[in-house]
Image (cartoon, rainbow over the protein chains, first blue to last red):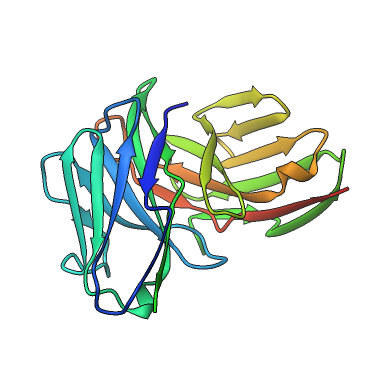
Length: 117
Length: 112
């Protein structure tokens, strides 16, 4: 199947710093990428939908100034957690969408575990 | 009530057992996905279904659109199948972003 990578896989940072997470589709072009967060023992929660060359669409309750998303190319989307605080500690997962048989299919990245001290 | 419900929430099985995980949904969908999440967190897409049945190795996924129900079966289960299995549905046609709505997952542990 299609491969999606994330970098870094794990990051520990001090409160107040900003952290950038990259999501790349390695062998296909993705017009749409999705960013999710997951708290322990909970399911994934969609944060935002990122379309190449346009502004991201954020879900209700997700601060767009806090979670900056840039989708500069068809293979790369970045999520920047600005002025991170301990409550931002979570597992962040991206997925990239391609069309398959007329329906969307998403391929998930391996995730980035963020710990804010 | 969640739009996507899974059962059971937790499942412990002995190696070799036949396992079934169920997913019910309450909305119209364009496709249903079964995902596997290992303890490290990475997610693997197992199946995407819009009708009928799909098989890949020891995994079988079925969907009944009329009953709004899907099942994931694992034959001859093995400890390496231990993971969280997540059902997710997508809505909207091919021209839309088709966001996924996730179930809460089924935590499977297969014992030796």
